[in-house]
Length: 167
Image 1 (cartoon, rainbow, N blue to C red):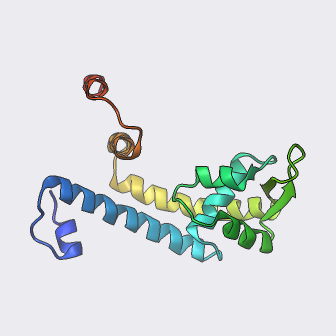
Image 2: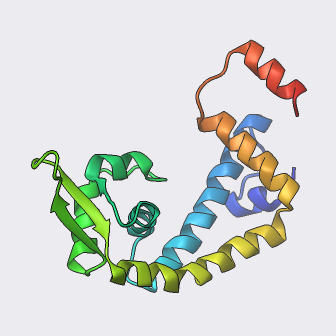
């Protein structure tokens, strides 16, 4: 492997290639998360709040319940209600009661929230362009496949053999 991880964490030896891969994945994810947090921070948002807005834009003009938002989050957030509260105070989200179940609150993105996402979007595309300049598209596909192996549903040994043959 390369020397970037060894230099970054000041460690010369790893217990195994698996340990090195896991550490590399964590450092890379932290790097991308920090870039996203920094950019969102310029707009007074956390990355989690941005994620909520992106989820609600995807179902605009309908909306989602708190539980559905939580289910779709990239990073699990312990208190989605508080995230939505903050977005509502800024005028980027509104909440209504469900017509079918008055106990259920539905969050919707507002026109101001859509405008904010339109402003942030091109800046976040810069982060993706930087990533694309470093990682060729073929490797992006392979990285996605590997990541899905890590967090996706466990597969049986027979399924793994079939998947490897189909590559």
